[in-house]
Image (cartoon, rainbow, N blue to C red; front, side, top):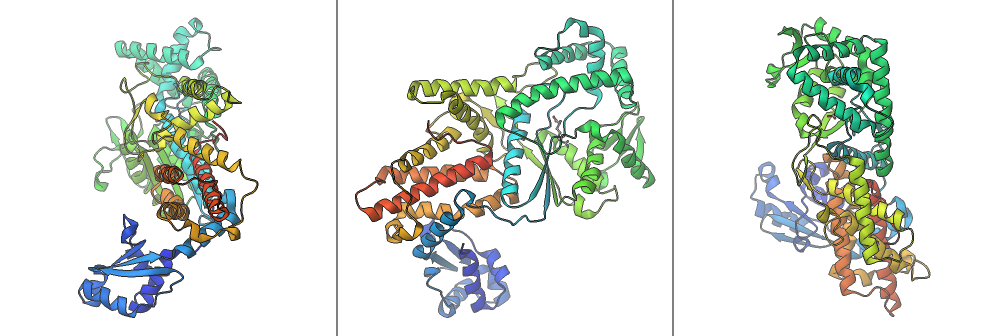
Length: 570
Ligand code: ARG
């Protein structure tokens, strides 16, 4: 496709003799296209050219050679040059691109030969898969799909929380009360109950707490009884987690959890020791990070010699650098772990691995999910089960279908797509760092800025296209018929799609895509309300059909990239 921005940069560069790259950096996209599709703020050159912006603007205006096939109009307003792209060229370009790429529209190869590691989901064994892990799963999954679509080699890792002192507690609890529970049914609930009980006991009795710590130590040393129990907990949990992954359609390239790094930690500790970074503090081994402006030291080894979450993450960085030679490594967790990742990323610089790796570690933090009833925590045991939440989403969607369209075929399957889609879209619809309030009525509202709305608009495009014999070819379309403001608005959005995907990965922010999908759905909705699509006039009809096809196509590609499945009817 024509890169209009680049073309504009080229024209300005030819006339100012300033490099195209520099010019391109300054070019802006005005908030309203009445002020042009691209604007060049001349004050950016004032220093270099030693002239006032207004003078620069008028000199460029006089000397610039405008290629009219690309730019149909240029204006100066104050120190700004405003460029209006040639609509006919734009429309032709977009039509041809859609026609040649169809369901692969927007796909590219910009990530060729680049390796991206995404660490996401990572629920904890013997604990419920909670709504924060859902966010991680959904955000990480969307990023995974989008990087892949842009040609990156992506490695999705589920860094399971299958290690740590809590297992010492679980083992102790099981030793004491295991006989009281049948773990074949609802194992996580029961393990959670055991966990709550043992935690309470630990609070009362220091000796029990020490027993628990010892159990974990034993587990690390490979003790048979402890290891067997640990495996039992792990298998039971994974089976439960899989139910959630099946509902969400998630999959991973690696399931290496924390325990995987047990034999990889000594190297980390050795390196830190050798370089004299490891210090003793109250019996524990730490690295002081004050010089880097981090006041809390990172704990590498606990008082009783057991390893920590942080040490396992350090070992994981070394392992991933060697195994995947990553160009970027993303960690998708809530902002509650900001300090943890700051410490880990800073300490990683001391491990003697190439700077290439330590520079490309990134914490993709997200906000909390607040239920209307407030925050949740495992220790107190008041959590909602995610599987139940997802199933509730499905049954609520089903109820809506029963009410609105009781004769629909495959109601179950469609309800699943709508319910799950609603939950996923809700997780992605605002910038990730914001806290999110989970509210059924908002997320399932078919008229709101929701997943079901995107699906509904998609289904509308489908049902229009069902009534035509065949899609016109791009050559058959009279571009004049798509020149009105409402159509152009859609075409411009279609044109932007690839750029939107690039923005998503440059900020690791899937909400850029969800907002975009809302915008294009709304733009089409207002077009559709003003213009009948299947009109008598064949030229108008063909043009409008194509517009409908483009929008449907993009809604589907975009939603799929977010991890949302589209129903064909609803
Ligand atoms: N299991 C952790 C939790 O539930 C998240 C792990 C994130 N990944 C990592 N490499 N630390 O909080």
